[in-house]
Amino acid sequence: LRGTDDEGTKFVLGTMEAKARVAIAFLDAWHDILAAARDEPASERNEDEAIEVAIMVQEQGTDGARRSEIVIADLGLLAMGSSDIVDFIPLIGFGLLLTVLTAFLWYVCKPRNHHSLRSVAILVLGDIGRSPRMMYHAQSFAENGFVTDVVGYSGMWSAVVWGATYADRRPGSDLTPALERLPRVQARYLPEPPIIVKFLPFVVAAPIKIIHQVVSILLVLLVYIEKPPEFLVVQNPPSIPSLALVQLVGRIRGSKVIIDWHNLGYSILALKVGEKHPFVRIYKWFEATFGYSAYAHLFVTHAMRDHLVKEWDLQYAPPSGYIYFTLSDQEPNTPPAEGLPNYTEIRAPVLRPDRPALLVSSTSWTPDEDFSILLEALGMYESRARELEATGGSPLPKLLAIVTGKGPMKKKYMEEVGFLQRSWKWVRCISLWLEAEDYPTLLGAADLGVSLHSSSSGLDLPMKVVDMFGCGLPVCALNFSCLDELVKHGKNGVVFNDASELAEQLEASG
Image: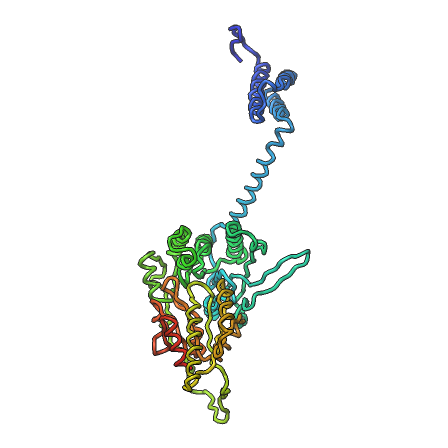
């Protein structure tokens, strides 16, 4: 080591002495760094540590550079001190966590070269048993030889109170009997968010629910379903987070994504918060971004197809073009006349003369189904019945209106019904919540079905009308832009525009 000392005198040091000087300078600089990290004055460092290194290095003699370097390195670690090592524990823990997370993501997201042919996963962000259209999809796939996984909520909730566990299931949340009988169908239930979330403010509860939902869905689609499905079917709305998740899973596992467009999610949100609300713009961007591209798109109406193709430039994979159907295109499923039994000795049931007329309406009690229209029409029917009774005209039958469903506005309207019924003589209105297998029985026993669906987007169709048609129930439907794709006024039903027209139709039906 050649150099000049503080007085300007040149010197030449031997190998071991030079290495000792280097070690002293190295540890001196290292200790300055540690002292600065602890906000300690550099003057408080311990000079004896560097001197100790120099002495120990000199004691090695001429045994070679390898041993001297090892001694210097070991003493450098000792010079750090136990407090310095403790400072690195969080960094070490973070490194281990990052390693574990990387290994997990690699296992989950590693590319799959082959997916399972003739298999499908159907994602329902709601109670499985309360999504009849998605159940029909599952049944169709399974009956055509597809291994079918239905992913959704079971309607089961549980809570722990004072050490005791309480659990229950919302009615109508099971698979339909037709699906339960099929051997290729498996329900994969998503866990419900912790019940405590219901008591938190919306700004806190909403992110927790979304994170819980994202993790649950990804675990099922990426881990629990071991073989990648050939198709992923998702209903829209809701759009967040389901559209983004199925696109991600489709890319990772090589599955083909099919989007079933029931309605536009942002239009439903606009009914609650207004069209100009920033959340509506964010929702619309999300829906358009993650919904425009898929292997196939299913639509309930021609109007929805035309709108989305024009506005969002929907992309598809099949060379034949869009896969779509409308309910008005379906041929009626009429049984063949041959082979039907001919009953000649059994009489049809006879209705009691005092039996009230039975009206059924299914509603979600949301702003896009204005229950006040039906309530006002029932009031008009009551007034007309009283008028005919007073004038001696042909009396109208008493009317029992049964409203099925649940939703946020149910309590408000049923309280109003209870108040009005105090003075009503000819009309009664009740609300019911039915199991899925009981609902067709009610429709089959009714005299008239009423649809109040007005469509938030003006592009979808009311599924309740399809149920009523299937049970042979006459339908009165509230008019909106594309309703004529399903209900033809005067042919397979009647259409009304306001409460007075509905009241007239109720009187004519009576």
